[in-house]
Amino acid sequence: MSVQFDQLATRILDGGAASATDALAVLRASDADLMAVVAAAGRLRRAHFGNTVKVNYLVNLKSGLCPENCNYCSQALGSDAPILKYSWLSKDETLQQAGAGLRGGATRVCMVSSGRGPSNRDIEKVAEMTEALKDEYPDVEVCACLGLLKDGQAERLKKAGVDAYNHNINTAASHHDTIVQTHTYDDRVDTIDRAKSAGLSPCSGLIAGLGETDEQLIEALFALKDLGSDSIPVNFLMPFDGTPFEDTWELSPTRCVKILAMARFVCPDKELRIAGGRELHLRSLQAIALHVANSIFLGDYLTSEGQEARADIEMIRDNGFVVLGTEDEPVAPTGAEHDPAIRRRGAGTEVAANA
Ligand code: SF4
Image (cartoon, rainbow, N blue to C red; front, side, top):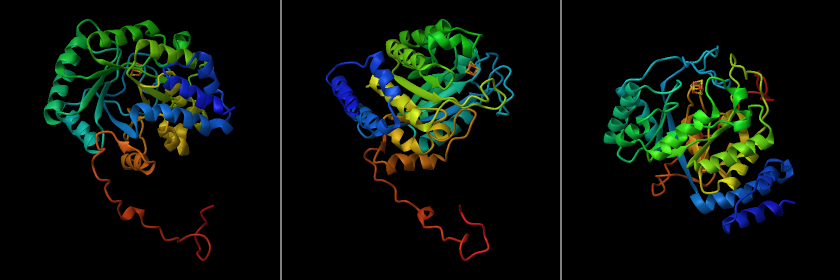
């Protein structure tokens, strides 16, 4: 049975393509076949990205207070999630935050703002931020994620030096209206098309665990393939208290790995990013997932905290991968934090055992 995934990888490496039936077989593979799926998807990952992991850093330029009603989002209209809420960061604050991520190992900065879409004044702000960031860090890749775009806005961002534009389709067209009613799936596709037409690299992905069927997950992935998304963030629903999805928990770590593997088979040469929900849902399988995906966010997400940024980098190195852009740098020696901790609990002590 497990040979089928290796054969699928061979077929794809020979120029073939995964079908919807192949994708479904990956998604529904038994947990006993998990490592066979990972090994096969890993062949595609290594063929296109070697042992590199691209590290991206999120800067939330404007948090919360959004008039849209995306049911999964802690920043949405009606969400009671006790997140940070603030209006636009200044240019200096943005540079400071982005600089922290770049020094931490990121090569791409994703500048995000909540809201339906930017005004032309907002676009000017982001254009100025981008120019300042590129003056200071000429090699940085900038991705903007500002919502639905209007005429001329993508072109202005491109002119300012923005490299990519993120706008996730989030879910299948056939499921979209059940997760948001204030804009349509077509609105989202229109923005991705505008970004592409302006010469921005399209970044669009999905959120798994929104009550979609297996077939709808596959529908969403093939839509991303057809849209030509260069990078595909795969989010796993973080069910924030105070949002309509607060009690939704449909994912397991092995299912998350299979979703990523399916994405790799369908879009073998695209940047596949493990996005929000990585720590929450993959848990101890995060490192296994790196053998399939080739990109992560460093540190924190838009409204939730991730694991320590240093743990992200260690996870990459511990598993034999290198951070993209640092391939030639010597690996820094590990510090005293790796000294064994002396046991001072359990047997021989009055302190409760670690059990
Ligand atoms: S438009 Fe963006 S920020 Fe606003 S609710 Fe939807 S996902 Fe959240």
